[in-house]
Image 1: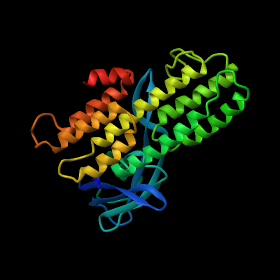
Image 2 (image 1 turned 180 degrees about the vertical axis):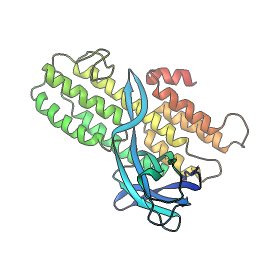
Image 3 (image 1 turned 45 degrees about the vertical axis):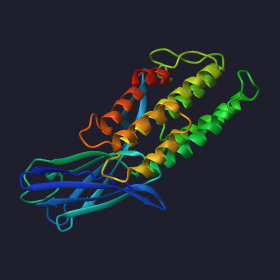
Image 4 (image 1 turned 180 degrees about the horizontal axis):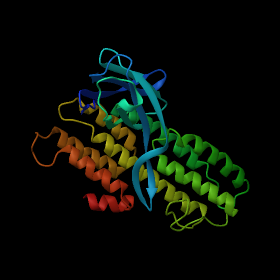
Length: 309
């Protein structure tokens, strides 16, 4: 199992603030076990932990990573120059954590006037757990896509309202937020327009998907899903290390790739680089970063495969 540990140390005059974060798996879901040190702070001082979920969004036809609209805060007390916190989430999402201490907000003597803050990004699950979650969500997506009615089919409005509600709920914890959000916006636009056309243009809620009938529009949605899955698998593959037992995680990612031949070829090349001696050509991290960057670009899946050869 790959365990991600992120540690950063900042000094605020006589204060030293550091934090570590480990993925946490329990019956309640996924999450994070946080521990940190706060040298120079007395018992009772408070560390502020701010959590932002990182999500994919479409800008034009490119996928970008940015914080979701909502964040949340936990206040953690210091004990013996240490602090701990356990945060539980429903899905293996990617989180940006900011741990901070502001002496101006607390009556702590001898701490100076400068605030200290540490920011780090991490996934709240192991590579294998993320791969399993990808497979589960892909099955949900495939079932939902199979229910799409033919253009002009009677009852499509009821189907669209029901599907849009399910997508809005799914978006809160989806590993494919850009595709799920675009799909929900597509259905909303269809309902507003009466099914005759789809809103399009630079300012459209579909973020660049052109006007077309329902079947063609759904093919655009499938393309976003494929690119978002490729970017996610590449991002997780970038967490694998030669010195770790990467075989199980790599097998799990192959299962998440499904029948996507291009993605499977990428994982095969990742395995070759992971098995190669260190310093022998470009490393696996560089390969994963390149494939993720291409998957997030405005290129189509077929164009990505051509560029990557």
